Length: 194
Image 1 (spheres, rainbow, N blue to C red):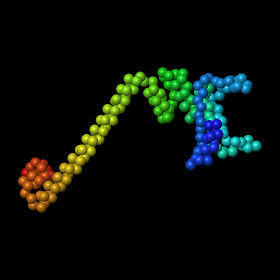
Image 2: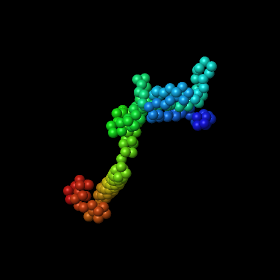
Image 3: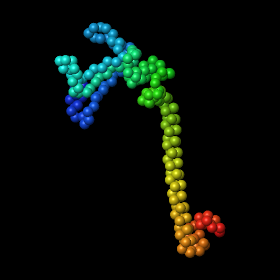
Image 4: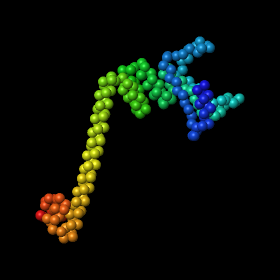
């Protein structure tokens, strides 16, 4: 019924797409109910698109049901399937030391999530606290940087004001009083010995 419902709603899709439903089988094999024979295949694909009398698929719905069983490695398995099947197999049979393709960033992310789930509640709390400290530190560093930028901008305004006052003929004592600069700072700003 779920597949039928997806097919019924296919016309509502805004863009053309293929929908994949992936089923991971973790048992070594299943027994075919009619023949009684074990099904030992790594990948089985069921396509919801109908076929015509010449057995040609008519791409109407674009829905596929994919059964993956990592217990039956096959040399013809495409790499993108193989990485995920290895991850499933290793997470069940070799929990302590995964033998998976960590160069695949999606696989690496999945392994990191699995490793995170293995942590004790205390370790998870400790990691969250550490992450919170880093986030708080980053906020304070950002605020400090902004304050330094504002201070630098304010100093530049004061320096510009001091130069204008000097150009307009104001006395050094008046410039010091108006800007709050020391005699030495004013000398540096104006490039004059004071």
